[in-house]
Every structure is written in structure tokens, then in C-alpha cells.
Image (cartoon, rainbow over all chains, first blue to last red; front, top):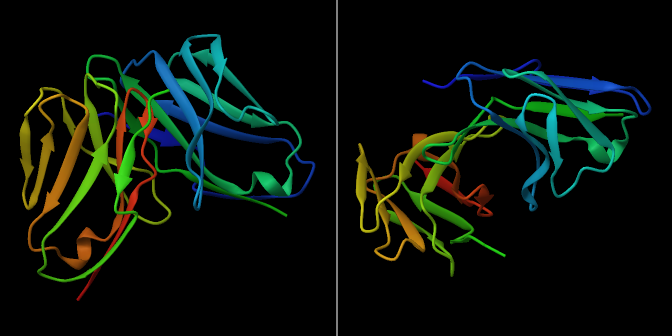
Length: 112
Length: 105
């Protein structure tokens, strides 16, 4: 089974803080994704990466950056957290052969 | 632009009832996935369908991929409170808006 883990289940940060969310997958997948999920808005893609050190902006990249230094690890960075970044953050890893994404358990981030 | 439309958006039923959730598009997909998500958790993959007309069963859940590979359905027989959650369909890295299912005892 594919396993995707996220560094924290719950985080509370203050406005202006730098926030790191980490995601690790154990299936040697090349493609990884970061989404945020908000009520009524569904899943929105922030960034994705198709290889080490490669990244592409998704639909809502503003206020976020990412890092992929190793194949198994994909980090989402909030340079200066704001209250409108309070959300559920979901990481996913893609099995290319079936175009199927596997999700981590999510991080519920609250920015005060 | 590819879109996936799910219906209904919300469904509240009694334990023991049957239900069907639909996922429709005007585009052809090489595969479609169904996920269930519980509050505060990440989506969990239930099934991937890849062949037009394919039917897959997972206990009381039956998934069907349309012959033209533009739509899919999820049928739950004798729903139980443990089936409560958000059901998402996905294809080509696009997600439907989800169906929120509530099964009352």
C-alpha cells in the first residue's frame, strides 16, 4: 500500500510566522501535490512537483512556495502566514500507471 | 477545460436505505477514482476504474464506469452510519466538488 505521511495533523500559528508543512511518500512516485480544502470550495491545487527540484504552480500559488530536495519529500512553505491561509492542507502522491493520487492524513492549520 | 460534476451535493438517508452518487463529465477519462473522506482526515482511495463499462464491487459499494468513459456512479446498498462522509470522484487530476453523505441510525 502507498503511504503518504504529513508532519503534523494540527498546527496553530500566528500571523506573520513562517510555516513549514512536510509530506513524505514511500512509493518512489515522481509526482507530488499540495492542495488546500475549504468548505464549499473543494480541493484547490497550490503547487505540484513532477521530479526532484522541479515544481509547477497550481491554481492558487500566491502566498506559498514549495521545496523538493529529495524524491520522497515535498514541503509546502508559507513565508508569512495570514489568517486567510487557515485551512486543511492535503498532500498527495501520484501513481502514474493508473493516474491515481494517494493522500496523506491532512494538516489542519489555524493562523491567528 | 475538463470538469467533473457530482450529484447530489448532499444526501441524508436512514440506515438500511440504498443510494447512488453520480459523477459526470463531457470529457473522456482514461480512468476515474472514487475517494471517501471523513471529517478532519485526508481522502482515502476506494477504487480506480479504467475500462469503459467496468463494474467493481467493494462490499456494499458498487462502482461503475460508463461505456464512453465520461461518467461513473457509486451505489451503496443498505447504507450504514459508518458510510457517512464526503465522497469525491476524480479523473486526470481533477476533482468533483464531492457528495456529503449522512446516514442516520
